[in-house]
Image (cartoon, rainbow, N blue to C red; front, side, top):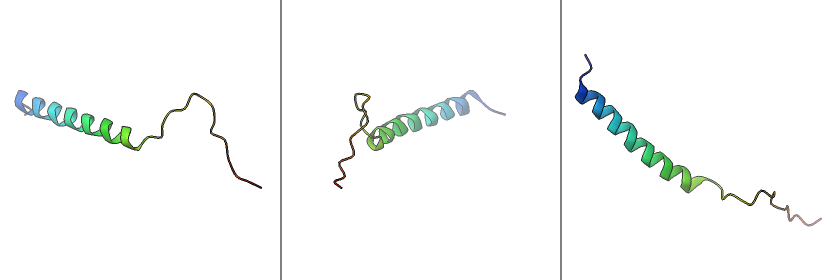
Length: 44
């Protein structure tokens, strides 16, 4: 049987995960440019 306490605990765990996930995701994402592709600066 699932009680209200268990449901509340699950939501708290999910909320905590979401906060940590967003923080970690922002740390590892590449910066957004203004829509232009970055130039390849390989010299031939």
